[in-house]
Image (cartoon, rainbow, N blue to C red; front, top):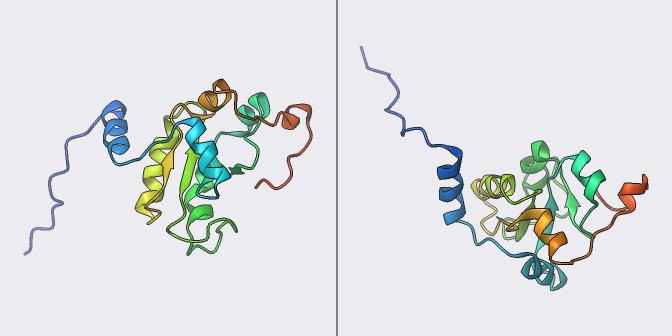
Length: 149
């Protein structure tokens, strides 16, 4: 009879070590560099913050809003549920979360899907706002943002 036991697993890591490993493979961007890349047409900002944070703090104008649990389905260029912006595996995606932690893990997941230029925003939305970059607060008044998923 053949032994079918799984190979020994890698030792468990904590979240801090996992973030360090993931970030070592990302070319993370600062807020102003992300803004410049978007303006130049070289990047797509993808906001994965949950609705309560978007409602509380507002939106980055022009960012594609995709809930974290839908991210891989919406950004996979070959997927049947992809967003129109998910045009190729060469797309430079800059993932934005609230403070720049969950976005690192999300960017790593997109890279595993073949989006080799996926990265995240250092410091997340809070760094964007602190840098004095534009924030659309229309969502705060209950107005529905136009052009967001």
